[in-house]
Amino acid sequence: MGLEIVRAEGSFLFDKKKKKYVDLISGISVSSVGHCHPAVVSAIREQLKSYMHLMVYGEYIQGPQVRLAEKLASLLPKKLNCTYFTNSGTEAIEGALKLAKRITGRSELVSFRNGYHGSTHGALSIMGAETFKSAFRPLLPDTRLLNFNAVKDLAQITSRTACVVVEPMQGEAGALPSAPGFLAALRNHCNKTGALLIFDEIQTGFGRTGSMFAFEQEKVVPDILVLAKGLGGGMPIGAFISSRENMEMLTNNPVLGHLTTFGGNAVCCAAAFATIETVENEKLLRGIKKREKIIRRYFRHPAIKKLRGRGLLYAVVLDNEKAVQKVIRKCLAAGVITDWFLFCPEALRIAPPLNIPEKVLEESCKIIVKAIDAL
Ligand code: PMP
Image 1 (cartoon, rainbow, N blue to C red):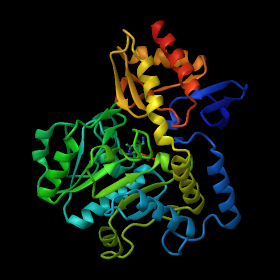
Image 2 (image 1 turned 180 degrees about the horizontal axis):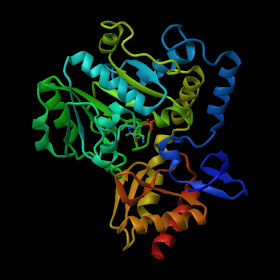
Image 3 (image 1 turned 180 degrees about the vertical axis):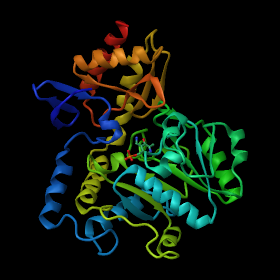
């Protein structure tokens, strides 16, 4: 984009020439509470007074990690009560894949076409698009891709399968929600075969799809939950979460089965705790419906083929990639930042901070519709 941003606050970014932009993509679903939220900044400052890094993760008891892990457990179903913190989403996926292999003693990793789980070797191995993989082969063996939302494909999950990794709503496929009942059918197949069910909520977590976690809407609980992005309120942190009993498998045979130096960094954990508290204290989930209505009201246009998504993650599907790029450029010039999707270049990405002022959202939608008018 060639854009140099020198300051960010709430839903706005400012460039060197003091031009103001509305951030309608939240740094790809990271800044859900807005940029530099005062509560998050204050928590970081407070933690800096005590310590930053002390030791590799897990050796010392560190208050910010414990508080954050307890907070996550309080938000989640009982069996998701034990958290391992990482530095990023892809690392959390790596940890989850290793945990599934260790628990089941199996090797097959199942995932879905057009799923995105990260860019490291393990996560790339289960990525659902060949174009991003072929230059880096050989990747992990024993992987299998199924079609998302195709219940009949689930028969390919067998007693050889260690785990099935799925996004409850596929992000990079273009905000593609799981069909009603699909996750329940998947849960059922996993129960029957002993495969572990892993939900990648890296992009959908912390209110993005209208509930704290997307899986709550389908009432299906995974064996392992993976989080990152919006968790840190702008600081780098990821997590994989399971039951205490499952997680203990990483502590023996071999001892220290998963290690990280920086994972669970105290400053990042303090920021994440403040981020979750902000979502709760400012009742951000309640405000999503109103913002969702605004988006649905404005994005009705003959040039819009479909508006896909839920909560505050949308794909505005246009004719083709060229049209999307044209709209992105026009909006940028008018001070509104949008984007496209990795596996759906013919759609415009709309994922503003959850607390974007309604008026700002409306004005931004008008600018986008004007750009679509001009196609
Ligand atoms: N899973 C999903 C669903 C994602 O959207 C992303 C990032 N776009 C990742 C995993 C990888 O996270 P990270 O970039 O922090 O490694």
